[in-house]
Length: 581
Image (cartoon, rainbow, N blue to C red; front, top):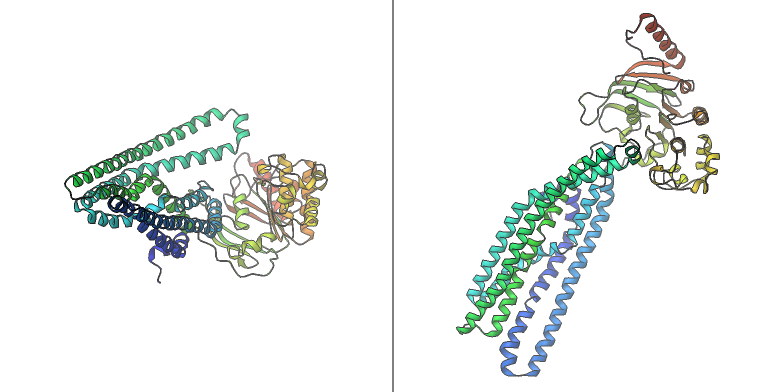
């Protein structure tokens, strides 16, 4: 069977297409359940019109036994369709969970903004709808015309009355859809904005408390919270108004159908059993539409979650896993590289050309805002918007298999991010902990003795984001993590920012060890001591290379430029950056 175009749009729709057999099975069980829903109606007709007339206990027993059997089959069919939907929901989550995780990770990595966990909430909302009662309305509603036909067979006027009430309910559902979509979308967006605001600000609770910023941010949160409350209130008012109207129609139908049946009995056109059966049957016929109205807001929320999740999977599709390549040696080449940030017109890096042989230790200098940290992210392949060529061992770094390349990359960002777990788990990058390599990395980072002084040593939990550690301890653990295993390319962004003299001495010793092992090291720093361990220095200014060459030559050029500036007064010098102090 050819796949319709709708199911070719994204991984989400393709996954739903893969579950089509499960939905067909649910449809079959729904057919059985809805046909057997006529059992109570037929039982009432038999009891009122046959048993009470014949006074036959045997007939009553037979009819009751058959009815119980059919009701058991109906209950089994309803249980089975619920079970199939729950299993399909679990399989949907299992099939899409990894891809949603990767897409959310890439979206956050690309600095696209938003709540990183929002996609998982969307997937959860879709799964909950597929496994809840609301979806049954869509499987049961097609059987409403069948019940109307049965009502018509009991008496034409009862069939007409059922159709009229069904049209009222359908019109109410359409009206509810028109009136609830916009408020529900606005309420969902306001709630998401409020949640993301809180999540991002509470991450820096210590800064907020220390500088008395809580009140100011509380006022901003209050504005978002009130907006979310107002929009949610509007959505709820509209939804409750529709539900109240639906309840009125339902109760009116129950009363008027009974009254119409009684009138037909009085006129001799319907039996008393038919009157009771028609009332029950009409209520059952309109139940799916009533359920559709009451759960419509859930359906709107699911549809919005579906649209958001589908767009995420379209924007960040599953990566094609490259073929396994050879072990890298660490040679890095940049050709006409430009890097831009989301929402920024001017590029951060402009037309960079660098050729760095394997085993080179390069120091990258420059004033704040010159693009040093951006260059570090470009070299490890995590900057989203890059043009030009970034080659590792002659191959584009974006084309490497990240799972295979990761162990050969050591990266210490400017903002150290550790994760909840033990010290050993963080250093081992949450893979299988190789104790020998962990100890070797911490010894190289000058961290081993300090860790042994902790109560549990390497098994010491560090808390969320490493909040149990000082800034210097986090930085040294981050350095050990970058050196763990056998990295061929090591990028250190301001690795000595939080280190004391002992930590800085250990850092320079670690860089010297990497240099002796033939590793390629990029060292972004402002401190002159780090320059002494470099073979080569690059100076960045406004995203461009101002100076590039052997360490001694560049240091001499910077000193000469600084002397020239001192002799010429405060006038700026073109073509060179000041010597870092």
